[in-house]
Amino acid sequence: MRPLSGRAGAITLILVAVNLRLCVAAVPPVLAQIRASTGLSSAGGGILTAVPVFCFGAVAIFTPRLIRRFGMRPLLLLVLATILTGAAVRLLTGVAALMLGTALIGGAIAVGNVLVPSLIRRDFLDRRVTMTALYSVALSIGGGLSAGLTVPLEHLTGLGWRDSVALWGVLAAVGVLLWLPQSQGELSGTGASELPAVGGLWRSPLAWCVTLFMGLQSLGFYATLSWVPTILEGHGVSALSAGWLLSFSTLPGMLGALLTPWLERRARRPGRLVALAATLCAGGYIGLIAAPAQPTLVWMTLLGLGQGTSLALALGFIVARAADAHEAAHLSTMAQSVGYMLAASGPFLLGALHGLTGHWTVPLGVLLLLLVPLSGVGFVAARPGAVGAVSAGLSAGGEGGQVPPAGIEPASRA
Image (cartoon, rainbow, N blue to C red; front, side, top):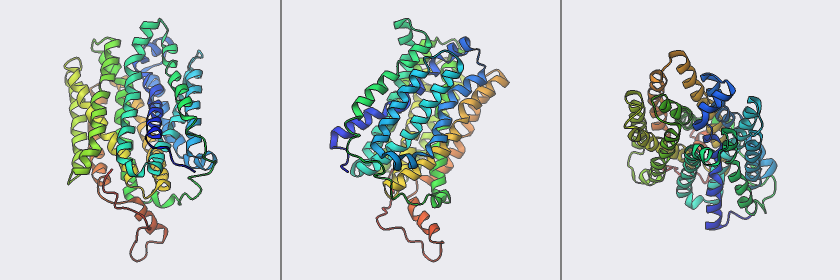
């Protein structure tokens, strides 16, 4: 099996990864229209936006088995084709079709979320820091594009919200064409036939800290992604401006994602980046509570920087705390299955709390409080170490000195 081919393979992988957020982020800017046309309540809207995040967690756990069945690169092709199918299903009328298409998209992305870090760990080992940063940026670009352009596309084309949301499936079709040549030459079962036992990871405190950091930062991101446009519209901001403001937040998010690996490599105490990310997010939440209408650009800048930094740290922890591509697949599975199941509660929680209280102070206050446990597990996940060392010791019964398996590196940098 040949690795992904140099720069061309790296660029293609990053371009394809943009699809792992596009069709999800297209819904929040038109959520008010969806609720008006379907009769969904605040809680129902929260469920709709939570469905893909729930699928991120529920389906991710099956990814190692799918890798054994199809191989990594062919499976990523199947991911893109399923995203395209889900986008087409959402064109059908009715809430059921909307939910089903969203679930298909979420399930496909769940597999892609696990696959891409594993591919980076396997095929770009010498460039994993750069590739992880670029992957983080690709996710931000995908979310920003659809969040900012869905409403303008609706106005420009005269299409309704359903057609405008489905249009983003076109880029999944482009992704299929781009990835098809890269998916050739890898037989089913390659790259996953010797996956180590996963049990040790589930008993590793370090693996749990990586997992909870992924979950808590994702909870904050998807809760704000789902409801920030609605929050702003409720304070007199137009739907178009609200979508653009959400999209704008991805620009500082990309900056945070790019700078974080560089800063972490040079930081004597990488945990300070966790504190920085939490502080930036706290500033954004406090601003949205105290003065949501203006200066909104400042609050969205703070949120974007904080969430971009948090995402880069979360992905970096998965890649750096694993001994090899096999273990990266299992750690990625654990972090994303449990983490996204936790994160799925975010959109629903905010919607339900808003329905109960009639305002957004309490929901945003909950997100503010959750930054405390986020910081705690992040400080532990940022410490040098590899989960493989813990897993190996547990698998051996934990007697005597726990010696890491051969080939494990210190993994001190994400």
